Structure formats: C-alpha cells, structure tokens
Length: 188
Image (cartoon, rainbow, N blue to C red; front, side, top):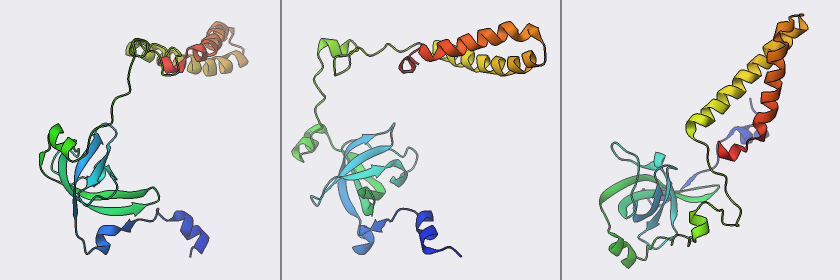
C-alpha cells in the first residue's frame, strides 16, 4: 500500500471540470488563434469570459484535428495547474470572415514591424543570425560525427591490443570529434 506522500507524487495534475459543475452545459465561442503545427490555440467564449487554451487532442471532429481562425465551436471548460482550458471542442459550422471577426473584437495581433536588416536575417537585438546549412550538409556532419565516434572507440581497443594499423584512424577520429563542436549548432 502506498503512503500519502508517494500517492501524491504518482498522481496526475488536478483537473476541475467547470462544464460538469454547470450540468454538462457546453459553451459556445470562436477560435481566435490556432497553430496547426504546434496543435495549440485559443478560443474566445461568447459569454465574454477570458480566452481559453485549446489543444488538438480536445478537438472532436472527423479527419483533421485542427481548427481555423474564425471557426465557431462548442466546448466544455476544465481547470488545471496552468489555468482554464477548453475541452471536448466540437466545430459548429462556417468560419467567420476577418470582417466578422473584427466586429466581434477578435482582431489578430499585429506582426512586429520588420526593417530591411531584420528581413535580411538579423536578429531583433541587431546580431546577425547564422545562415542555416543545407539539409544534406547537416546530414553529412551528423554521419561524420557518428562514424568518428565509432572509429574512436574501435581504434582505442585495437591500439590497446597492439594493432598499430588503427593509430591513424584513431587520431583522425579524435581530430574530427574535436573540430565538429566548433561548427555552431544553430546552423545545423
């Protein structure tokens, strides 16, 4: 049997269902933002409450579990350690136009102004961001590093057993593993 402290550490975060407290009444609202790559967005309830977080696992729809800005939805509300979030989200129908969203006060946050230096690849603090390496080159670096590590380990065993033919691969592997970290990993 677990003691109270062990049971507390093994339990999931507390979730309080607000919808259940209202007799399973589903609220309605409009999707104000949704990032399909991240799977997160926000829903603004029609009752004027604060915007709620929504995650793709809470979307109840056939096919793609994604929402679009301006989409009307029904949802329940639950509470966790990070605050209130929408659950059991069901799309209702047509997506509102940008004009209709503006009338509701759901205007998107403006994009930060970009000057020519920012557009050319500079960071906001004025430092130059390194240019990304092509994908094939990143793959070559990764394979080269992996192979060098394997040769280093094998070479150490071979040289320690008296096989001097492995001395050159051992030295080359050491040099490669010393040089690879000097390539800024932000460029990979």
